[in-house]
Length: 147
Image (cartoon, helix red, strand yellow):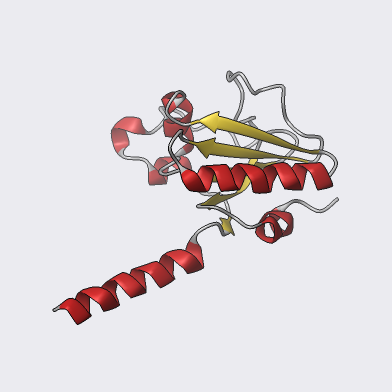
């Protein structure tokens, strides 16, 4: 029985190592949220996700890395360092860190299920991709829009 438990734990660990921090395409938020949390009207694709938030005017000229973190999340601190390093080396890229516990309305609206989650936004605030878990610098750079 212990061998089975060990194999299950190993398989889960390998799965998480392979999937954490990888950027994926966007998704339709109402499909991810349970019905009571789904927005009444889905915003048009051209809408800035940060409208009506304190960060609405902080978008980068080329892209914005929007990081959702929590206070006691060790991978969140590592993600912050990686994203700050990317911003230092890539002009026109902004980094915004949001405390998920203090901004539950935004977390629910955007379908954030765990921290750290990083969204890549275009200059108008539309979501281009997201990563759940701590991405590497290379993963972030590969996911940024070219140009």
